[in-house]
Image 1 (tube, rainbow, N blue to C red):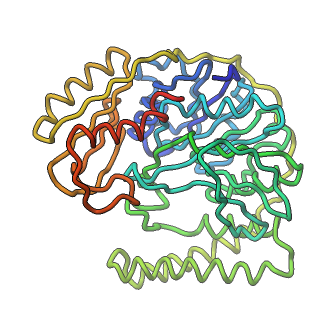
Image 2 (cartoon, rainbow, N blue to C red):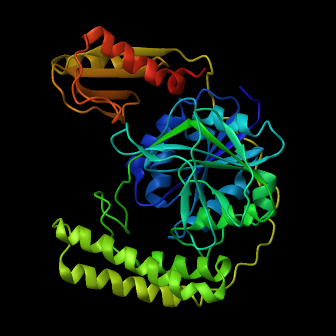
Length: 409
């Protein structure tokens, strides 16, 4: 692995339990060296300070609902050559930090983005995209190996906020994130500003993060929006900066229509009522009007880190333990998994019933990975609905699928 020093920034607000789960996963990273910077509200700060590893974490109290300003507060403390970002409702695979850092061994790489798994731990939520000044995205078809791309044709290589990294010198030179984006489009704005310099971005399929979409003040746990005001405001700021004046009205109407359709789908599914749709759309419009009046970002360069690099203790040779069994053995196997985690191992537990149930995977708060489902059912959604595996063959298949993320190679 590369010896590039990596600063990992986690911004947290209103989710102290999720934050601790994220930090438990970060503590199992195999890369050396890295540091951890937590930018959090009072509840998050209090929880981190109770963590046995708290002395190895840079804690930045921050109680403002502004993801960009919070990330900038983290950058100011980041002393690594590269700065990685992950959300507090996400957990990285053990090789994530190492793969992120390795991308910056190439002096020409200014940014990097990995792949994101959704809440079932199996299906991709995010892979690779480009984006233009109207916020329109297009998928990028790449293989399984890292790929360095330079944007062209007015487009940028898009990174996902919960799994991205930037060379600190480049990020600081751009002034970090625009605080006008309090929520949404903050990283897309940065991607386009970066593209304007001609800088290259590495796409890293093996740098994998699991993202849960936990509930927040702006969305419910089932991803139903609570308020669209900040989304409307961010679109106004984004279009003012990146979209030609003659196209802004049409793009905004397209965005507005898409948000209305999304709300109506939730209403048809019974998750919203008609009055909720009206309220959400009114908030979207009010936010858009407010966002058009927000101050234009003066991208003043950020200075050097205010604190020295604080190496987080990590063991790149940490042993990986693979456990498997039936659901009725779950209690004893989980006890074994917990004990192994306490002994310093990375643990993966596979619980398979003799059924065709679809598989799910999660990182448990106790610090181990748990996959569950049917011995004959799908894990990858491209698998057949039924396949006559033996238990041993199925466990081997799932282990082989996960080994690159857990062990590297």
